[in-house]
Length: 289
Image 1 (cartoon, rainbow, N blue to C red):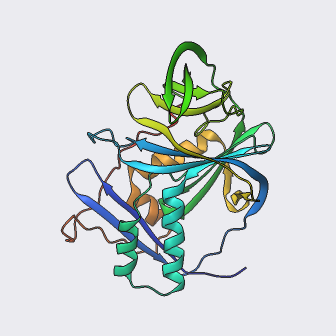
Image 2 (cartoon, rainbow, N blue to C red):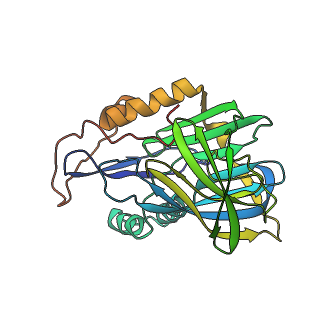
């Protein structure tokens, strides 16, 4: 398999102290991930996602997420991350300088949603893929397909041009309100939210930490595959998956150097000056239980 050069501009994060820290890590070898076609896209649903994984922020940053609804399964992921990864790959192929790479990463936005969620894949399961520390650890968590237990309401509202009805549930440690439309014959929705008598166009938790609002729907007329690269990810249980994330957020530098002791990490403040190790990153995961 072809060996490639990966630049992992891992994080540009605001930690508890008012210091912006950036980790620029260059890995000299790596393998391109195998991708398998697992279904064909029927609908693509675009969501504006607000993510307050850092609860010290007064406003939740926005990014674009996509839900690919296939004939048998679905895939949910950050389009913002996809664009950044694609631009980064092109820059590396063209031997761009670090300055150019940083400028491009800043232009195309930063993603907080590193997970990809595959519902009903494999059959009867939900599979989550994640890249921790920008891909130093690639994790695959395969679980039973647990559906939210919704309470339906007669309340209505419009999202885009669609009439929607309200539903609420307690799911994975959060209280969710969703608005779904029966105009589209799909019981799908963003992330792991699903199981209503129509497509979920708007969903938010009651703490205002996470919000998904549909901004566009496209029915695919031409062939478009749903791709899966999870064969190259490390399989683990949900408990082990959560433990890896807890370790990383508690000590990101220690996590990276423990995994790759020969990697040099440069940490700078917002003025570009060297600063001390950040000991902990804000941790408020989408899935709590």
